[in-house]
Length: 143
Image (cartoon, rainbow, N blue to C red):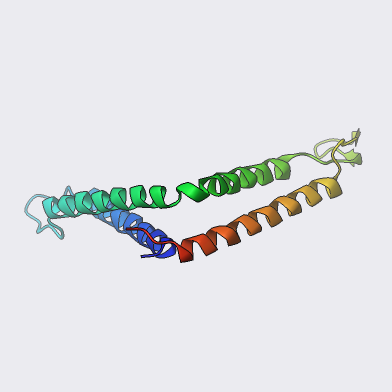
């Protein structure tokens, strides 16, 4: 199976695990005398089986991704940088304060246009790296 399909399988396993956990959480305690909708020991066995399958798949994916791990980490850090830049205040000029009539004057060292250009470049870098990862994921297999 190629890495792209393995990643989809991983997401499906995570979804399955979350569904089983929800069933156990919401159906473990019932009013005495009522018929249980689910057999909790069976669900727990399924949970263990799916969890073990997920672990094995994650290990295989980690091994298969070793040669592109730097790109994966780089994408994560670039996304973090975008979040950071979006939070940087770029207030410039006179602004009336919200709760009183005081006018404050701001001066930003990093201007709005510069910040937007940096974010745009980071997004382009992410797109390029993601395209490379997508190609890798469709052309490489795991065993």
